[in-house]
Length: 314
Image (cartoon, one colour):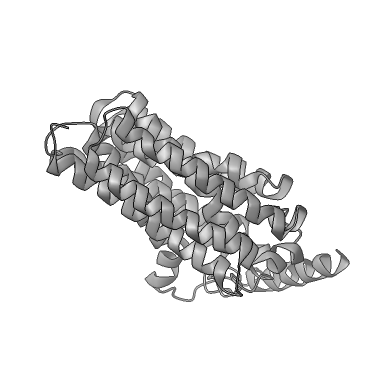
């Protein structure tokens, strides 16, 4: 613990020394782009698009599609940037994150805060004025849930941080749905549930791979507090739950046999990865499971989208 405190104090001192002088150096747009976590945001926007598509029988009007995707994307990017700002001290110590723009000084703290503020305000105004207030406030609540409740509190307070905080990252399908209909529908909540149940096995696989990093900065991720064996069991159980939840869009009439087949195949594959991780793991199995989980969610929602337009009457 004393080593962690020493490392953090060293990072703090270095940051303080940098910020005592006026920061006038130019910053590449790539640095700002990096702190928005573009790959994560792209996946979130995809799930929002599917929520929009499933909410109506026909095509989505571009007058709604463009501002909705832009607003949701901007607020999601702002949330990611705030995460970078809040976590920069521990990011500087962790091997996975030490080269991010804020810890290594490529972007100053003040510039990052200004950038996140502009993204937040712009995204909220677009959604509020061009879509509807419900979607604007729900998207803003997602930002607060991830950036404040999860990043500032839950992440540092409980090993169930990702289980509880995962709700913030699961709401984009609901945002897409409300952007089109201005109402919260049970089918939209089912899409949220899909992402919510997917999140723990997805993130815990990464946490297993990076357990020592989290232990070094005293972040109570499940593999740190309860051990890797226990975490593997939880991942396996969650993939079983995900399989059950994954059947529900078909069972409630949201989708047809196209989705049913696709969901069963993808969920069985995820279960196979989790089974190997639990009972026959190799050194890279956790990371392979994490990477497949991203493909899994992306493919699952693409299949939902294809099912909706191939068999619209289903």
